[in-house]
Length: 253
Image (cartoon, rainbow, N blue to C red; front, side):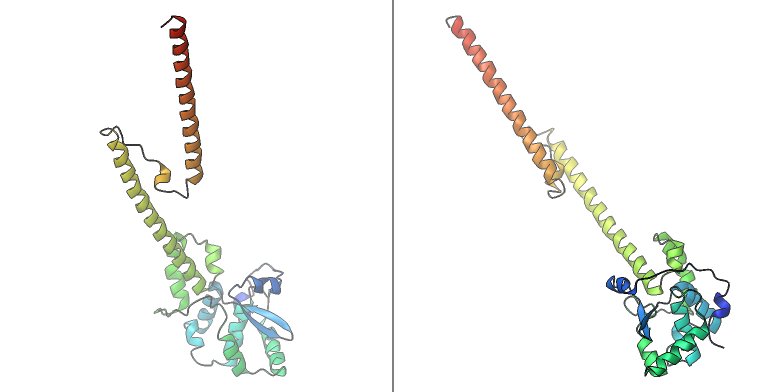
């Protein structure tokens, strides 16, 4: 018998009210099955992939290598619809398929219509694993190390999880590269500043010498304060010269 009614009958899920038009504008990786003028949102999440594989005892990808039995197709649709259609039953999916057929659809149309969706969020990756659920459990610790929260992990598709993990690796690589660059600049700055001990004409380097855009405002403030200090020093020298001149003049010198 098809369906996941037995697998999900004890599972409590929050009912979510979703504005489909708003969700489409966000371009999220969902697939929509239109029946009776209504768009039903579909996406296979990790937790439901595991239910399917436990039910059919095989990799979920093997279920759609060729056109599966109608009961299997509708069960997959039920699993993909569960997160947004609270408590949807297999019989509900059967009724939707009957309406779909009445509107001119068929099992063949449904297979090719749904083949693109149900959770594909990016490139189609080939995984050399026994089952998807085993692979999910295998990468779960690494996903946690990448900062993916458990609830987000089990609420995401496999491709979404891989995208998040790959993004984390890219960010870490960029951070590491920036850290190496910063350390190199720091060593260069130390060498230049130490050179002022042996060269009176040498000037201390400043952050904007290495990061002109980041410290642009700081450089402008520094130059403004430096100019004011130079003007104040010039005025002080002029005042002391005038005082000395007047003193000598009074003494008849």
